[in-house]
Image (cartoon, rainbow, N blue to C red):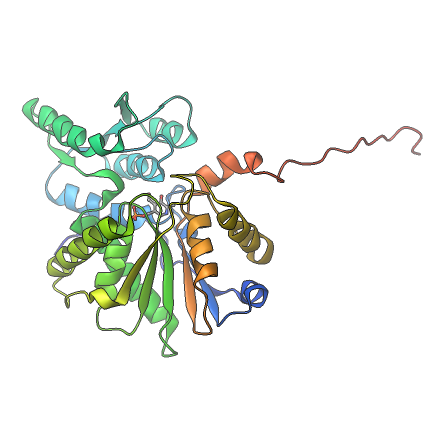
Length: 325
Ligand SMILES: Cc1ncc(COP(=O)(O)O)c(C=O)c1O
């Protein structure tokens, strides 16, 4: 059994979103608040890191090697988790590595950043493996983890999340869970954990074509279930739709409208990369049946970019106290 290194404050809240439901005129709606996982600002990614670090410690590793993009929540979370587990952390980062908040957080946690010097995200995992081998040759004990932590071990985090939310839900009609899909580990774990229930999963793919990411998710879900010793995942429970819109991290007008609605009705700020796109999919695919929108975090990026959102800049009026008593 893969040990878990506890980091998150669980269970995260499952809350009814009645104002959002009224605005949409749909069936009963809930929010699963994984933006409130309570470790750093890691959101959903802390669930994967609990198992990745548990595995690293059990194997006697002394350095976590992983990677991602300059705005990646995962790299910041990985650096913080490695630090508290007593491991060093080496991060391979694609794109422009200057001055992002997530990389500042990773650096604050003591991680070393290796700039890939290219926008080619697909090269990160190969470079992570190469760096891991280099560290091993130098006598270190590295654990190399691909982007997003999306391995069967990492996906155990969301298999646990499935059990958590089913217990919170109780006996009423099984809902459709809507969540964003990046590297696919979260949705794969969820699918593995929901085998044997009547729940359905609707994924919003933000970075890969639906066919490609569906194949990856089904493979990973199968490996995760095998690792956990649980029932085989059922592909018919899963649908992944294309939510890439204008591009990675760029919201379409429909994404923005959905994010505005969630902020205006439930008071939750969503990021453009994941949250806004999942919310738009939840809006587009709403039915009269019960649904649950899984909020995954992304607060660092949401706060970094919020002042750039059209219409969110304050209109400054002149104000004077001259003559006031
Ligand atoms: C805020 C947020 N939501 C969703 C995801 C997607 O999760 P996954 O990569 O497991 O598909 C990520 C991935 O980094 C994320 O940071």
